[in-house]
Image (cartoon, rainbow, N blue to C red; front, top):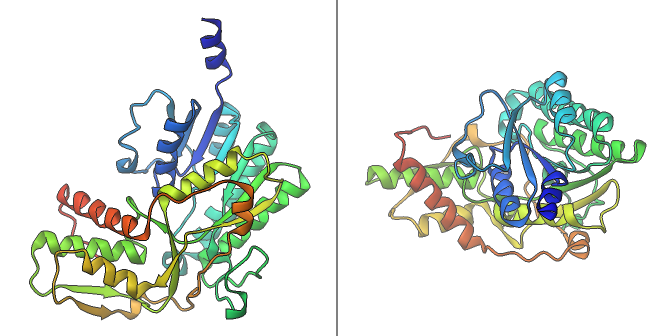
Length: 343
């Protein structure tokens, strides 16, 4: 009995900001299977819960309303729970949207991260904190710098990427100036079930699923830049990487890690594979200028040697697995709703 009570009293607590997103929801599921930690999920007042339906009734999951743009709510959350671990995943994550809403993007991602770390400095300074940056910080990279290491200079190609540069530097500053136990990840393209349709491979899959559902005889898929090169990883492998880094005793304060898969292909090849595994024939590809970015980070190939020297990480999902699961996710999602919007 004493052992059981001791485990309950000293049960570690983890905060996941952005728990309702693709990454946050998969991470929560992983932690429920791998740990006995209490999971505090930060949500906003208008958050949707589709991605966390599987864990909503789990007694180890606590949902708390807060917003990165509101210091009072962030302080209240951190003071109340004083988490041992924090996965800071919440952000305005859409590069294309950031061109229309740059100030909101900067406020959420840069100032929001500052608000969170200020609260942690005040109420849980010993917590180990993962700050999620992005490979987008590298932007337009010279071919001589491929594969991209952590030492490649920043050249952000969107307001979103600029915001992630700020997020990245804010995290490094708090680790250095206040000796906080923070590490930063720059994850390259990661996708899979629950990926929103703001991203190229997911809008392809959604468009295909819509046309399959409606039995369109002359299918059309709307696209942007098909020549951009991407290196894909599965979201379920990505959260495993984050979890291993959180547990690792080799991470240093302010460490930065590139993480990514090993399948580097053009966006157009991704589209062709999704069409190949679909039920569509004679698909017409239509390029829309509205889908093109003013500047594109078009050579996204990572060097992840530092990460692999720090933890023992093995991918479970192949590119084909990921794309098939993504397409099936949209097939299932659209079978439950009448949505026809194509982003």
